[in-house]
Amino acid sequence: MIKMGLDVFKAAGGELLRLRRLACSKCGADNVADARVCAACMEGLYVKCAACGEENLRARARCRTCGFYLRRTLGKRLRKWAATRSGRWTLGVLIFLALAYGTVKGVQLVMQVDGGG
Image (cartoon, rainbow, N blue to C red; front, side):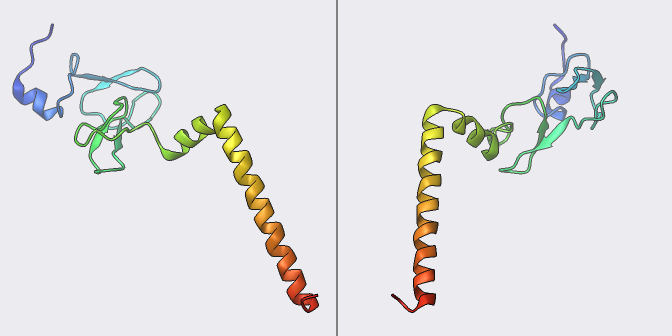
């Protein structure tokens, strides 16, 4: 195991650096520890937390400051939910209700234009 001083550990933001190298989460290439983008694929190695704004390594699942899930966005969660059986059923019901509401409003508008009768 590599011995690392406490100052190096704190400077790395609590991340354990193996031989002072960072692996890219996209292509797996090794990069120097202070790199901001991958030298091989030019992908950013850091991402800002949407909740607190702290910069974290892209490979992390949670923010090191607030614990917010970095990889889960609302869109990803909705797509995953919509792929389930209950999600598809619920979306179908919501679409049906939206169409029924639109139809009723359209009929009411036509009746107003025609003079109510």
